[in-house]
Amino acid sequence: MTASPPELTPPPREDVRTRRLIGVDIARFVAVLGMFVIHFGAPFLSGTGEARAAQFASGRATALFTVLAGVSLALLSGRGAPLRGTALRTARTRIAVRAVLLVVLGIALAWATAPAGFLLTVIIPFYGMYFLLAVPFVGLGARGLVIAASVAALVGPQLSFLLRSGMAADTPLALLVDSVNAVDPGHLLAASGVFDLLLLGFYPAASYLALVLAGLAVGRLDLRSGAVRLRLGVVGLLLAVGSAALSQALVEWFGVDPEGMAQGAVPVDHPEWLLAGVAHSGTTFELAGSGGIALVVLAMCLELADRTGKVLLPLAWAGSMALTLYALHALVMTWQIVVGGWVLGSAPEFLVELASLGPAMPELPDLPDFPRDGHRPEGVMAWVHASMPELFLLFSLVFAAAWHRRFRRGPLEALVSEAVARITTALTRAPAPAAPEVRAERHP
Image (cartoon, rainbow, N blue to C red; front, side, top):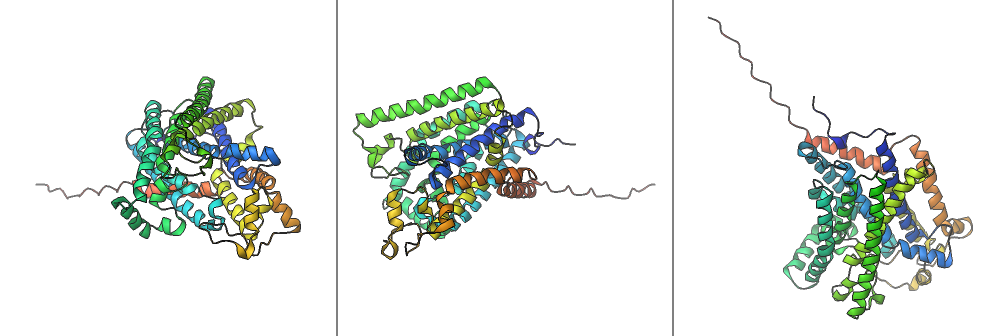
């Protein structure tokens, strides 16, 4: 009998590895909480404190979410020791199938949340593309992955900029993009087609792949070791501080003014902004800085998980269903925008004014679908919308705890995992050998 590949055999729930995974799940919840803060507002904070929390979370929550994607890939492909042979091929198939399912699920969620307009960019289809691009790298060890991540961080943003510049001009590349977009269902349904996910979207894989590979390298380490966690924290801190200092020095040296730079990929007419580290810009400096913070947060969560025992288990339970909670928060935010309640929370003043324009609202691309009559909920519903940061945080913890009492995985997590298992089994099942032909023996 052939033993099952390591990645297909779940570890016992109470072994030492489970303790390590609790820390990773807590970090996942911190990442999702950062997105809650950006979209709903900071729970139990107001004024300057809330603004600073949102400013700190911007970009860094995405980076943590992306680094943890790489850690998940390591857990799916042999943990500390990369798989080999048939086991590696099976793991790659599972990861590729998971990637495609995440892209499909993400496109569906992006389509459902389209009324949120520019206020929400669903990261899940990009997440799937990260998984797909990382498939060739899952057979590498930690050292090879560190090299690959470093090269991707240094080359990816610049290559992305050059390719996007070519797409913006009258070139064969631009014609290719237009031709593909014309038939790409992801692009037509939710602006989440192949080129959107690779280069043109808010979280382009060409830039953010570096963080996934960094997370994959981290997942290859012995995260149970206190010394490893300490090194992770120190390296992360040095990356964050060093990249910020170097970026600032270069910006001043070349006279770059990134103050007017909006979040998102660097515009092709401003190559000098590649020296800046603005949140969500996907520059080398932004990736290094936000990725460094992600390493610090992960190291702290791993250490806290061991030192606090069961105290932080509710956070781990919520983090174990980060995909479900992310999807729910995106749908709730969209509902708030459609009924006019989102501006009752922590929206900036200019968005409050925009939502109040009513019939005079300008027809701008990707504008949120606020009620055209400027209607806002009143009474109890007004309180619900204004208290959404606190309400959704409490809901996340209570729902996750209640769900965990009966099920091992969150709803969407279970759906994706079950689909991955079934599809992978169908793809990798070897054909049954033909029965040998039996001939009657002739005796003299």
